[in-house]
Image (cartoon, rainbow over all chains, first blue to last red; front, side, top):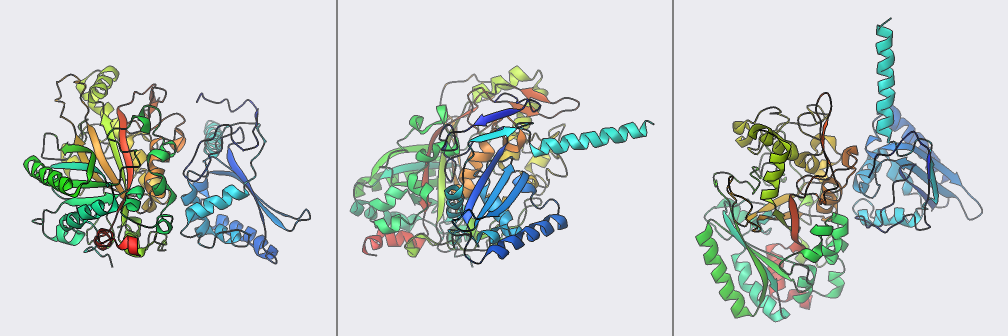
Length: 184
Length: 440
């Protein structure tokens, strides 16, 4: 693939299926990298009476990251957005993540990390989460595929730039400022 | 407690074999298949018998495809409980593995993609005369039973025989996982022993859980999955590439080391970045004693895209204990002497990758480590040795002040065959041979 120009905004309209050409990954179709990187939007109905339990996990993740800032590093995330909403058909949980890896490629690593941080536990409050999730990765992958709502448009003001490149650029800026300070 | 008296020796012990023969088999019907297995299973050594006494030369291994289990009479309800990738077989998973184009299953040799492939007999032997004896004996035997040999492959170690290496000249068998419960101590830098459930069914794995066994349990307990992989090595092309991209013999050796991540002697670049150190390469107490994250984070010694760093990223990847596999196999085809031109003959490696979960272990390694062009943010690279290449991928060699980038890396290897097998325990072989599966 040719080097992408990260300073030139780009948008990509995506077919209904979520991909242009069916490419099988280990657990199902692989989704394309877009100007807004990899990512997914998973929308699942919450089991009755579990709203507070789901909300409480927001705090769990906050504490986990505070205690160990690199705890989510393996997911190569840019952003996570967790939303609870009800538009008339019951309470739903939306898990939106923007990251740099193809989720399917590293799904076992993601699940292992979910187990360590308690993210997995939030899913146990959702309908359809497989009971044997600890040992049945294909079932977990199927859960995500079944509840994923692929984007039909993704846009990046600085497209295709990875979070590691952004962090490198910020580090460089900081080092450069320090260098200028030393020159005074 | 690991039942080493019930597990086939294949993944537990490394026999001092210098020759081998693989026989790919078809069972015309269940009766003939069982007749063959009834006698063959007497020849199959367990981890205990082969491990304890080297004199036990029953270095025979038998394993079955999904359709082979059906051919032996395993019922459909049980067959349905096996994992999806095993049911599909390796050829159907080629897109997942990335073995496409010239590496695609439509080009594979030896009839291994046929649903008629039911079993493999792996005959390891101390030397070529012993291999020939085993081969003759097996040939007579399959004739008597009426089992059909679809194809076969002879393997022999190539000179110099003092150490294991492949046709490009790289020392092999340096990084092997140590399985918990075998009593073997890992060499320095190799990490802790790995839970038996990563390799054998019916044991807790690194998640702490024991995954459910496919049915019936007597068939699958103490079993493993094997991915068979036959890979041709284009030795002449490889040597031409080294000569075209490096001026002196020393520079060519360094380039060969950069592609692999180790010198051909086995010495790791992280510990010997400038100059080869054959004594280090041969010393199992030292040749794995390194990491990447602290000792070589930018790949100035060992490129991030080199073969060994991709296939075993050590401390720079997550959950490495869940990705380990046991490798067995050897070289086939004639040795091409250093000064000889390419002779057009097929030579390469024909190996088995043993594990408890083909998708998590073998397929992950192929899909991500070998063939994902964006592995470790490299952008446009695949494994330089075993990745699928068509001349459109690069190889970056980090170097101060400016990295060296080789564009249009040629294919040094071509996949020539592959199949998924189930390697049952000894009691399971007895069960299959007795037609227990049909009665269960």
